[in-house]
Image 1 (cartoon, helix red, strand yellow):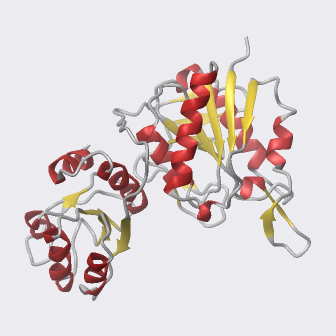
Image 2 (image 1 turned 90 degrees about the horizontal axis):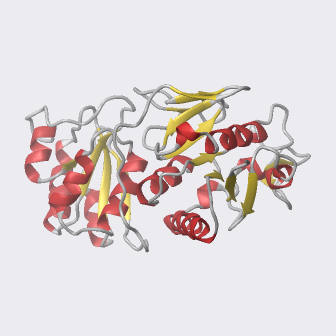
Length: 323
């Protein structure tokens, strides 16, 4: 018996076409949506297109609307798997948002393309078909939201876009993919050890992401305090260190009860409270900065955003980031 797969098209390069001048633009009709009508022999496809946006236009509001659409669709009819097509620039953020907030064990796969539908070597249809294969695979049940491109299966927590244009752009630094897709089958060789789920019905908090650099001072931190942000994530140096000139500004945010989370601007390794000098990780930990356990900056921002809608306790937020 064929499985029921919910297809949600949201836009991105996978839904675009290259014009005669070489510019990649939104197509009048989503080419993947048209093509999906011809592959119903794989599964019973329930196709929905809530919006058609380039991924830089995606905000947490659109992420929340996708979450609610998936949940509503599951209640309306039996759904065995979900495939979401999305632009690659912010794909990892939407995937991680859904991974943290959708309360289901059915396979949810997010995919995209690096080349538009009419370019030579277009990868969109191939990634789409691979994603359907994963969504109907029994071994994908209970593994959280997955990212599938270029024959590889990655977890939403670990995958990140590593190249501006290469079709193998999505990688999981340190960990690698958890499975592969072949012409014949889907193979998993790893399983995520734990999953986190948090309730979320609205998104109204303002969380900002900054990247540390040599010679950075406190001016941006004072400006953010005046902007009344709700939280801040910093891509800090090395194992989690900051220039000493930033400390006064960071302390001003902490004094205003604005949680500050740090990750590393390195894409391998985790932040740790190792260095005891002024601005070193131990100093930052002592003044109340929260250390994240291995997330990159954009995902830590998503997690902090979701966390702030669930608790005002900095201790609870700290616990969330230790998982």
